[in-house]
Structures are given as structure tokens and as C-alpha cells.
Length: 142
Image (cartoon, rainbow, N blue to C red; front, side):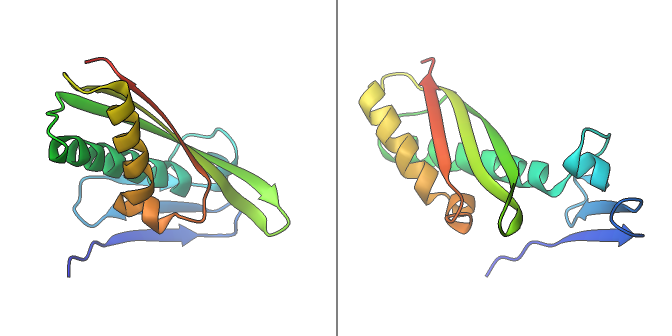
């Protein structure tokens, strides 16, 4: 079993408090607050970090899917836009839009889109977030 660890610390109440996030690998450490989460204040937030994890997972998994189908990708770049809104349950992640641009020579658009959609539902982070509606816009520049 592979395990990964990250740490977060919060000090104070929600509105005036502040927090810090640190990845177990040491690759990232940052601050967050109610302002960076629900407004436009400087700092990161859990949704942004979730989007980064999803974009990274999708890009790697898409490269794997393309390779397994016999197409060698030169690059795969993905942006994940995480939407959050107030619902009856409270603040909720209401959707994730994946936008990917790849450079994959020799693949038809039909195969490219099929593999992309299989990856959207099959990558590790997508499966963990299966209750969240997701869309994919995929373009091949190869």
C-alpha cells in the first residue's frame, strides 16, 4: 500500500483565523484563510489544491491511456477548474471542468476523445471525486 501525508493547521475562528498547509514531501507549503477560500485574498485554498491534484492525475493517466493505445504523447497539459457554490447542504463543490491540451501525433480525434473520456472517469482522483459532476474539453495539437 502506498500512503501520502499532508498537514494543515488552523488558528483562530473562521473569519479572522489563518491556516497553513504543508505537503508531506516538502514540495509545497502555503497559507490559507477564509479570504483566500471564499474571496480573492492572497493564499491558497483546499479547492485549488484539489484542482491541482486532479489536473496532475488526469495528465499522467491520459498519457498512460494514450501510450497503452499505441500513441506516444509529446505533452499533456491540463487545467482543472473547481466550482463551489452554496447548496442546501452548505458550501459544496458543484463541478470540476477539466481542460486539456495535448500533443499526440497520429491519433484520430475519435480515439483521442474516447481515451480522454475514459481517463476522466477512470483516473485515481476522478474516481475519488465520483460524486462531483465533471466535464472534459480535450484538444490535440499533434
